[in-house]
Image (tube, rainbow, N blue to C red; front, side, top):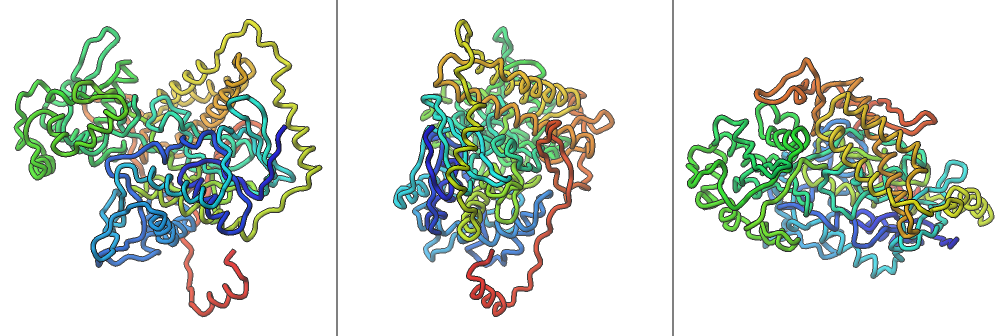
Length: 632
């Protein structure tokens, strides 16, 4: 087995991963990056109409402060105050680092970074470099890593975190192309592997990104807030959010059954066609599914799409070529005031959806053309898809997990809580990776002795002996297991949740974990798929365990999921499965933690860590900083 040795290893080549490696290198650490592929990951391969970076206000005359921003992050519920304070305090340093590396965030002629308001944001702190902001960030940080001479091991899937006396001492990887084992000896690991994208079938995560959350879970790390996700309408091939102008141009919603029959299903629900169109328009603003917008808001559109896809087993499409409901002309003044005013100002009160989209946002059409789909002629298939996990692995104020020497940054760290200002994820990834690098540079672990590490490898290697099984006359079945597990999760444990479906999902995941030895591949170059399946099943087990525990201990609906309650409220015209009890808010000061035990995953609850109250007299801080040489 090949063995490489570094002081620290970063897993992942997204924006958080590259930043972690660059910071560690700048702080004097011998660091390398391990990744499945340089071109993979969500931050490199996703975007939106105006992808947002959320930071402290840096323009205009609006009063702002670090503490105010921390309070806004904390107000999302189930958020630890120290993480919120760090994300606020280091947002400017992290943002300016990106600017200096060449990311083109816009400024006015005086140099102010003028902002705009995003969701859950009272101070217009948001900014954007365009629909591919995270891609630009990743490319700039990659270039910096290359300039710093950081080694990147591409094509390696991390499959086990190695520990000695409960402290990180290395990682075991599989080379995807050959199926061979590779070991990295290191003292600290920063996981920047993104969210658990592979657990859902209906997903807007890029297909090349599946995540490796179970890597930390199986090492003994606690997770938190695994029930808290963001779901929204998205195209399924190619995967892309259909937010913003894709909705505001009022496309036609069509479902198709197995016989090819088409149904313009919004007309079956809305008696008033202009109410339907106004709700579609609002989806552009209110893109994520939000349980607070079900009874009287636009999230009913998400439920109608879910009903067609899951309950009726139909495929759902957006048609931009014709106006909805057979309308030759839309009487725009019959829309809601907000929709009419917006479309009037955009000079888009004419024609068909595609003509309105061409007027308002031509790049939105070109984006799909670049991905091989011409929406000027073709239907666009959509579903209610998983987009972001607000929970993840639990971390402290230095983004260290409950396993000493293991850090998580980016989406795999569960710092967001229930709701969050739009764009705060990009900032959290930069801040978290900086915090981890700061701590490692001052308080990092020491490498264990060579003989000890080799002994650990020898004991571990026996678990990965593939040559003691005969693969003759065995057909590949592992991809079938993967697709089945993903479909089961989307149908039972996504935006719509009920006790029966959750139990089915958990029992099936645990049964397939027990039967992993029955999964086969003929080619050693496909062995990595076994570890993909293993990751999916263990992560599903943890996530659904958390959902079941939440349903039993809390029961009411919050955030971007709906928990069935037979005694709850139901919007007129919807099926009983969509009946729910609105959030009472009594768990927003609590965080749900989930950990693997001998008896499987279990969940428990703790109080949030409050925002630290500091009386930082400058002279005292300056003296402490000089005397200690660091702040750790």
